[in-house]
Image 1 (cartoon, helix red, strand yellow):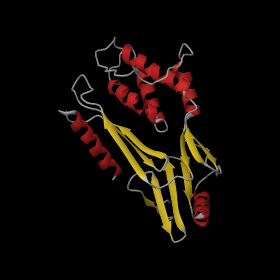
Image 2 (tube, one colour):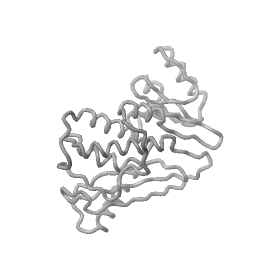
Image 3 (cartoon, one colour):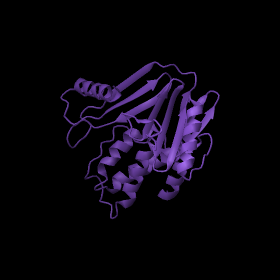
Image 4 (cartoon, one colour):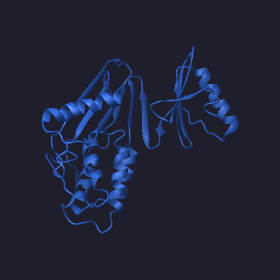
Length: 250
């Protein structure tokens, strides 16, 4: 039905569909039975919603406020996205035994190994928490690095790895109201930053690069990804990080 209405799938995301006409562009984001329709062609948006109502039992919830656990707050200055309710539910499921908070999601210069600590008798909770944190990183780039590190131990987590998961949760408890803000007056200038650790993994000495991309004053993309080859120099690790950024942004 989406393609019959004139939408074309996006090259960058199979869940995103685009319709372009002389009156403007309309975007449709579809995930199972949840959908966002937006654009600068209100007549076509009304037409699409009418077509959908003719074929499906559909409820129009009005202006976007929540989508897949992500809260959207729109003001005259711009809009922000956050997952405060999602964090609250995650903390409730984790059942932390105290009310402590920490200033950072991971201690500085921590190098975790598979042999640190004792194996968890039941790794299910660890895997569940890591999966939840991966989804939370959609709006919380400040936990991207520790989550990437901790996700490497989901096959055989230990007590030490679990203690670091709890630290991330305590950090989130103290920063639960943080959100990403996208100002309406932002410029369209693209700014990219990249960096990398060097030989930071004690198991194979591979480096860990990261990048972030700003469109004007809005943070629109970020990633942490372990390099596939060993860098012999720190400058080589940083060049590989830049290459990763160029390959994924362009």
